[in-house]
Image 1 (tube, protein in one colour):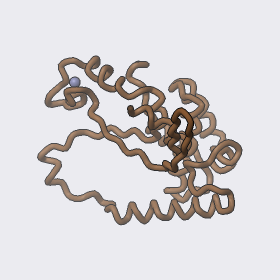
Image 2: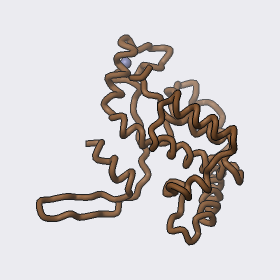
Image 3: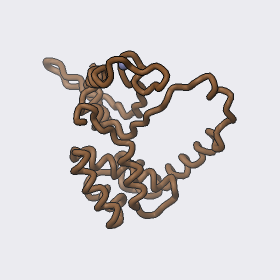
Image 4: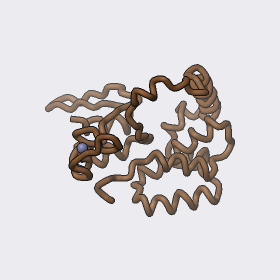
Length: 195
Ligand SMILES: [Zn+2]
């Protein structure tokens, strides 16, 4: 059951409960997952339009529960690769350069949380999260408005703050600003079922 991932995603622990035993295992991991947009896979394909849209997508995507989607911070839609794409030049920024930016952002976080018992933005909570990721006034307003229009859960709200802090770190920005909040919000999934 995919939903059994909910607890370890949240707590970093897997708890196995039996009649007379309760065992905790460390389970801190990064979840990376991919799925088709709908059962036939052609929902967003201009060449081969899905014949049963939008129901095909709603049915298919509803196999993942709302609470599980809520725990996934970064949703990115990617178009299919066509034969013509294969002959394009490589991207301007290669993997090694991206890895260097990520390493720098991790260094920033290591220094930020030194002595606080955690290592990354993902683990920051409560007052500490507010202190390190509290955005500027316009960023705060954007987040508050979005929380209402996108119907963010409290969990979703805090997850946006953590992602925004990481986006700011990747840009070597000291403070979380409105563009960082906007980008973090753009990665949140808007439920098809709500539309
Ligand atoms: Zn389809």
